[in-house]
Image (cartoon, rainbow, N blue to C red):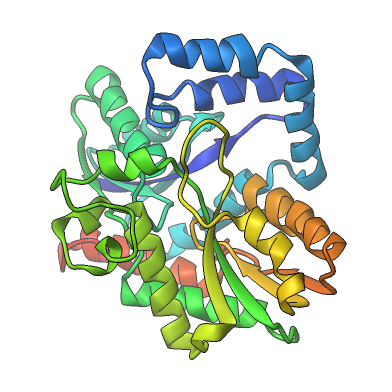
Length: 345
């Protein structure tokens, strides 16, 4: 019997320092997130980041700003998406998170209890990255070997350029922009260290992280987060007919001490008012569901910074979330796989 496991990032159980600390420990101690030797990672995470109470309280405050009455927005929106996809699918659909509650093991157990032995792993990330897609696939395989050896996995590859995804994303952005006359549209993607790009380069030579490698055909693009982000942007603006001088792309959420993908969202946003951009709209296509990075970092902090620097109007466009068209696209991919019509996505 076939079944599907949707997997998203995860969230603390509550916006308190008590619950944020173990969540951050699990997240930041992941070797695919901070990819340094274990002892170094433990020193940085457990010896520095999580040692200071103020850091935990600061993170908790950020979560508290965006917390909904029903709970974590990411969790709530993911469940809503599951609830829309499941009735449209020909097989059982379960939900899990890479970190925190609703673990991958719990999600697989629910499928196993229904008799599922053939599982479609569906990471809810359009673009491939070590710190998102890869860590989900590796963790799921570890759990399968230990707990569910009778199961067989198929995974949904990065869908950053799939026509039906691009159409759904473009339509969602168009709807989100209704009534807002922007001077500029910014595509802000989650940032990752440049070394992650080189580590996932299957050719071991193509990715130079310059102005040419991402637009030069290569097998490296299958796992190149940077290329996939730029391709998503290109396809969306092409579909929406946005002029080249009306949009740009940046990367957010960087950490100090490493060279991360640039240009940086905060730097670019702060400089825009001086360039005559007074009305700014921001979309965040690295995320399927709105979360801390979109609701607090962009919709709150970036908005405040933009206005402090002279901007007059700032609009954060919602993610796909549980949009009907997106849920239909997902269900269609699932059913194609379930009925062995064509390869998934």
